[in-house]
Image 1 (tube, helix red, strand yellow):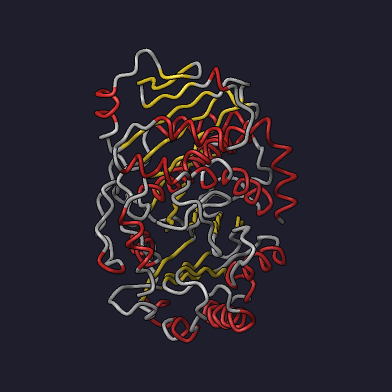
Image 2 (tube, rainbow, N blue to C red):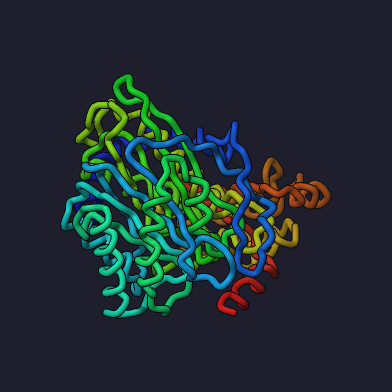
Length: 459
């Protein structure tokens, strides 16, 4: 499925490039493009009573999406009081698509979803089951068997096939999933299914997250309004290809599975693959996209269909909104940082330079210390091992030029630079002077709290 998606993606590149640029510009005007009338949602107690990130944004108002119901419950994967199980039930005929981690270890839930999406060709997904507190990764055949038992129990209760049930897990690696904790809660889950449980669902899948993450948009397909809603979780172990997280997006549009897969693969590249917290990829990364077909809009079978133009823009903006929230909730984060690279030989080269800057511990700790140490940026640029012209490199913090033409800027003002670095949201722009390639990556700072959270994760 991944190969097919990549082939279709290449065919759509000319169309997609313009769409992506437009969508990203709109979405980047604010990292919460659809939360103008949002109401804050109270976060569930996180492990160790972590304080809410200073970069947190409110959970948006998400109305019911026709064709999906949600419920949460406490399965007991955590010792403290919190809900840690989430289920979605979909209408018959719901299309599904997925993009997953390329991590060499992988996990039993990822293996299950990849296998059964391929078998079903993404047709008629009926349920999604997600637990927090146990990743069920590096658990061998027992882990795979646990996933199968969960899917089997859900399939019997929802009157569908095992392969129509998607499964995802997040938590500690190397711990076998106690599937009985999930299956024993299914009667309670079925009784609690509602049309508007998005905020609760977002809280139930949190691990070290400090706030629930959601996004919502409305689009028009051939004159008919459709809705797009999504939730995600992620705070640490976040890096591109793809970002370490779980994300679940549902639309009531009618989109054929092959077209839906193309869109998922295409827009992951410009959203979740453009954020990084700590440079570490997870074993459980999962993005699942569902289309229930309950809106009344006509069914679309091609991702490049011109009637899908507004939907494509809004879908990408929702995915970007979710991706940026991962950065805002980076473990211990106090700064939200946008890294722009221009003048690179190719887009791939620009992205590598941007990622090298964004993932440099020296750069990230300078952000944490509010130190405009542009020399660390210069170090990271050269360490990327990509073509650059040292004598044409320009480094800028917000509107302030720190270096240009290969040396410190004649307009450099330490006082103004220091004042700028006190902002919660920062932007660093770099031009490397050899071409027209450009890329943007979002990251956060690296603080003592990150060390404290991860040094204490299992205890």
